[in-house]
Length: 388
Ligand SMILES: *Cc1c(COP(=O)(O)O)cnc(C)c1O
Image 1 (spheres, rainbow, N blue to C red):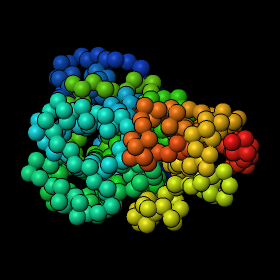
Image 2: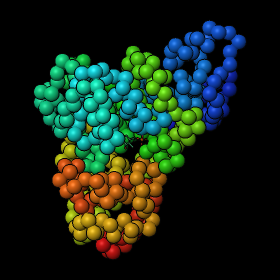
Image 3: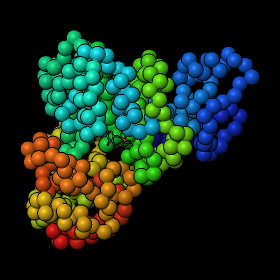
Image 4: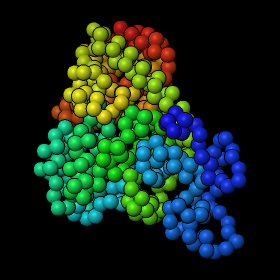
């Protein structure tokens, strides 16, 4: 089945009935006549439904749908994207282990990894992700995880997953890929050797800025069972209603991604030709440093990207006040176009050197393009740019 068909033909885990919409099982517990199935459900991820921290039918429908979209065997939904990241790091790592990670990581992931490294005596080697030799050289006896993001924020950096994952596999290292920015419609990391794929479903999968959630998809049943046993104690489970909202949003993912892709290309092209814009850093553009690597295994670019205003910090401040249709807000992957000026918001504590290291300039704007009519976005950008 194509993804477009799979996301609207949701399977309902209820015998003898076929509701078209997945019912919301807003219950914490399930009652039994017999103690055996109750005990069984607490011991395995695919047993009877007993207690919603262990399994819930609405959450299960989400897990099965996303696992299939990603080409994995099973999934664990979480209460947020960071819930999925933290669950994975806490489940897989032991004191003294070594992690290889690409140097451009989501801020929350970078912070979680650094804190865990301090507490557990972990060592972390950061690599560019463009060079297999770097990963081969970084491997040690204690390397446990290779951690990558399909398309990184805010630079649009893409690691060479198809070249790196086999190196990790041969060394017995688990490859974890955060696929939030690409979605399974543009890239399926498991097909390129990933063992675990993570999402913040808060972004494209939910898609409507109305739910916070995460998910981890596993290529292999054994690892899924191992992490599930940890997950019931970690406790970062989603509420059934959050899973229900995510399933509702997910049904239009293929339509939305098509529109996002078209809009992103229009907006990036418009910005590249505007005199108030010094540089556009979009992976879809042939002059982006990751363009060639990305083109080999990522089927299009819908993700947020950055551009630099020629007028620097002052222009950045004026631009964010000048937009009318476009909103000043964090997050991405929703229906509405959002901008951020990192130097005065998410990254305001950093000095000029630290900003440069994070590839953020004083006039850098991050734009997450939504699904509005592209002409309205261009008109809004044009009037906001003429005001800077
Ligand atoms: C937003 C995001 C996260 C964290 O997800 P939350 O749902 O906000 O917890 C992790 N990784 C990436 C790439 C993200 O964009």
